[in-house]
Amino acid sequence: MVEAYAEAGGALSNQQLYERTAEKLGVQLDLFVEAEPVGEKGTKASKPTRHARWAQQTLKVNGLLERVERGVWQLTTEGKAKLRRPVKGMALLAFSTRLGIGVWGDCTDVVGGLETDITLVLTSPPYPLAKTRAYGNVREGEYVDWLCATLEGVIAKLAPGGSLMLVLGNDIFQPGSPARSLYKERLTLALNDRFGLSKMDSLIWFNNSKPPGPVQWASLNRSQLNTAYESVLWFTNDPSQVRSDNRRVLQPHRERQTRLMAAGGEQRNERHSDGAYSLRPGRSYARQTAGRIPKNVLPFGHQCADQKAYKIAAKALGLPVHGAPMPVSLCRFLIEFMTERGDLVMDPMAGSMSVAKAAELAGRRWLACEQYGEYVLGGSTRFEGQPGFWRNDALTGLAA
Ligand SMILES: C[S@@+](CC[C@H](N)C(=O)[O-])C[C@H]1O[C@@H](n2cnc3c(N)ncnc32)[C@H](O)[C@@H]1O
Image (cartoon, rainbow, N blue to C red; front, side, top):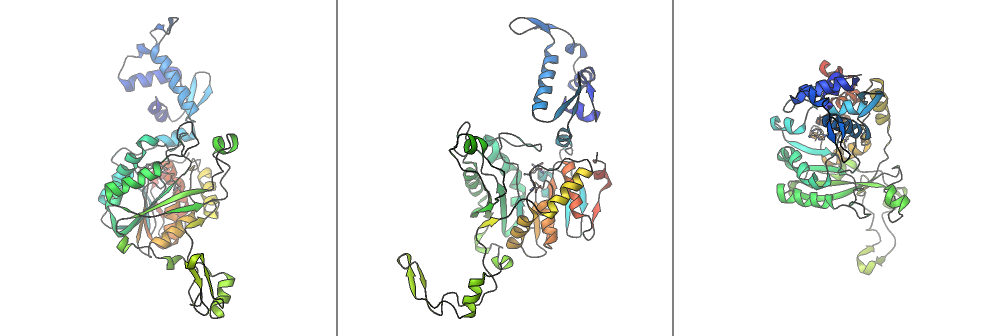
């Protein structure tokens, strides 16, 4: 049924839907009209017709199908986006710049042919959400196996000391309970057990502009606090030669530190916490350093100029705006921390291409794959004006 609506490209009457669905299933159209007793009361109806109506309601509840008039339905923008996947095994070079390429395709079909090492895989996979987003989410019970299978090929291409960074949500709860899922812990163990990856850290992306939630457990039941962070799980295949270097992301010294350095360091002689910390005159904070080492709590709000421009451009093309874009500023910070100019950064599940745009701005080479063509086309608008920008005409056809 979904294929029938997608191929129609517009509205279908129920009669047209039955004809096309019957053809696709290789069954007689009569099946949709022959009535037989259904249910306890034995009311006469066609079972396939009832199934079709049920499926229409399910698609409607999921925001994929909308009623045009009585007996006539069409896919919503999200519904169309959901369906524009490339044929399995095929990938389209969608757009490129001098530094990178955006591919419309499933990442598992793309990475096998890669002949160069990846220094950083930075991605935000779909979370195991109970209420699914337009791009689809995998259930919690299958999540670890699904993500490991999806990432296996890219992990194999990591350079020695290369890193995998996964931006993952914290608000996944055990069914009907305010207790959080342990999926991130299970995933951490699986990445270690199955691929030998070492955990470097679980960084906190602190986002104070998140809307209040989880509504059920914070606003209604009141047993939880409002969420203000997501995790950035960081793994490497070789901690002894990990490529990260905090000197690439130093922050300006605070005024107090600048004054201390200028004065030759601390003048106090003190011991704290049973001697764990001590201040020694002329020694502590005396060394001239280039900047402050960032803390592992990363405060980045959602909104940024790049994100706003992307949304406006996608809407102008009649494309669905991605529902979970990451701030380009956060991606750029992580990329600069983890890689040097010219290194290759990959985002296998690229959505609106935020990671790719950050890599472009930071002067890193990049490779980004996204399974939905509409998101690739919308994301490609971020690169207009970048050196060497080129876009495949085959992609432009996806605009409404
Ligand atoms: C949470 S979103 C990523 C958002 C992205 N970081 C951004 O800033 O826009 C996850 C994306 O992964 C894509 N995806 C899921 N599985 C994929 C696969 N096997 N290959 C390519 N893309 C995939 C989904 O279509 C979705 O757009």
